[in-house]
Amino acid sequence: MVMDRTAIDVQTTPLRLHGEPTSTWTGAFCQYVSRNVREYFAEWQPTDARAEKEYRRKQHTMAEIINSCDVACFVKPGGICPFCKMALALLEDLKARQSFRLHSEDLFSDEREALRLMEQPAQVKLTFPVIYVRGRRLNGGYEELERMSKDGSLVVLLRMTDSARTRVVPPKDLQLPSSSQKPQFLRTAGGSHWLRFQFYVYGNVLRGIALCQVIVFGIVLGLGGLDSDGKHALWLVLADAAAFVLIGPTPLSPFGCLATFLLWRRRGTVASAVPYKVTFTLYILLLAPSLVCGDSDNPVCDALSSDGVATTLLINSSLLTVFRF
Image (cartoon, rainbow, N blue to C red; front, side, top):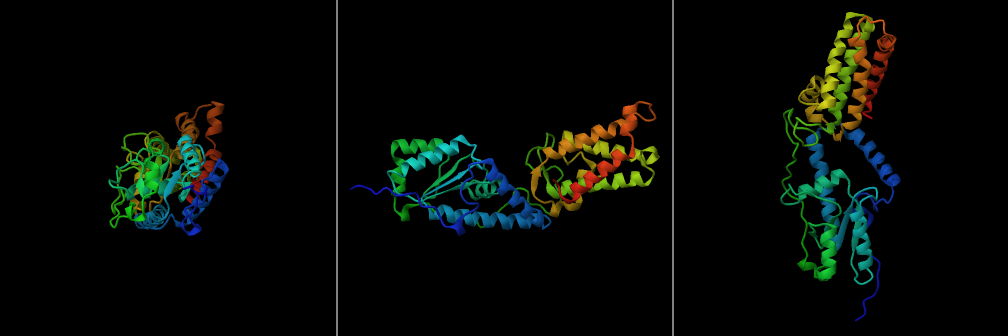
């Protein structure tokens, strides 16, 4: 029997998370901006309840996708993953010999985490590409897909009846790793040990730190600027910025601990701490001369000891408090 050559079927729009996988950084960037605009307006909702709701929604969406197609291939956004490209190319080649339904698209970090929590055990590490064949996840990703393609087991699996396929069902009890009613000062946003260089920060905790900086800068300028005794309060900003840069927002940063305590239940989404570490490094470089030089006649110290520096940092921290760029 000669099998008809048919194109791969793609699932309908209601089942899609983000559409076709992006092949350029431009498409990935546009999706990133769109998602972050939505996240901005939702970030002040109770974090744990919102995260659980979002994870459940994403899990049901992905389970429906996986269960309604023969092959689901989730790839790394931006089109830069070579294994993702090879997996899609292999599947494209296979469609010339075998008719099946394929769903492929970008897998962003939150969907990846939701998918990981749906696996048993939940500690499993998902690497790209994440491939499901008839509901069964290929632990080896592209390498397992290639092996199955060569030994013929992939075709055998695709030809199995629907009654023999594995059904993916979201768990009834969803335990989020970061879920806690009490502030967790030793639990980092990225899940690493606290006594390491922390690469992530909770969004609203960062806003709280920036608000503390605004208050201190405002007090110093209100008391007469850097020429007054109030400038000694800037040592607190300097020490806090150093702790944030070297470690992270908790547990050594005074402002970070205060913000974590006050905003824990609405701590927001996890964001990269690296841009803010760079920003606070500039704070240190600008504040240190004015605090260390004292009454020195050094022109560099005089320039950096002006109220303009404190005003500039006040404006920047105010923007971080509102927008968290």
